[in-house]
Length: 261
Image (cartoon, rainbow, N blue to C red; front, side):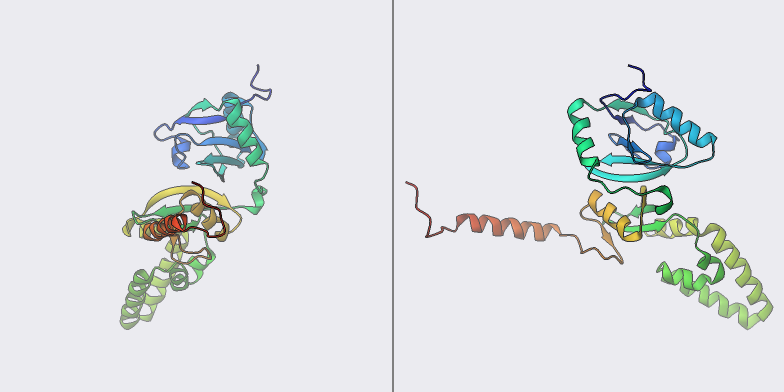
């Protein structure tokens, strides 16, 4: 069967090559490519690679829907993945197709790109992967918004030092800092998180920061965020207490039920 025709399988990542686009997008082994631009994709590896290369050639972007550990999430791509693939069997494909039909999809213009970083304690930083004008207009407010308090304190101390020396030096320093913060703001945020022991975990697209937090929580039920509308995840101690309660309830005899001898 030609790959231009629909098949009865999806493609699954077998191996992520070093320095590949899939590696840059933080994709993993066993991730399944489910849809391209919200269309269930069963056209095979060759056709997928061709379409993604055309997207790069035309300087466009596309939505690629990925399934990881029974969780769907979207990524915005502009290149072919450059990795080795396997295929799903008929049973897997049909189940994924049924689950995908329940997923809420959005157009490319409705989505924002996010980058998630985490530490060993599963504390996450989730960043909007776009430049903010606030970083260039008023860097202290941008630092406060991103809760980088120690950097903000350092910035204020340096500003007072420059004012005490010369007002023009302060103004020059402010302009240079504003330009630098605007141009390098994402790298700065990533660097601040790495200093806190966090590493890159996930690149994905979502409609809002709240939806982004939900996606991370689905993938990692124990994920924690500094500020989020989500409830705090259950700790291991709480799970143990629940299991103990369940065992106690199992040992309680209901007097209304007949005893079986």
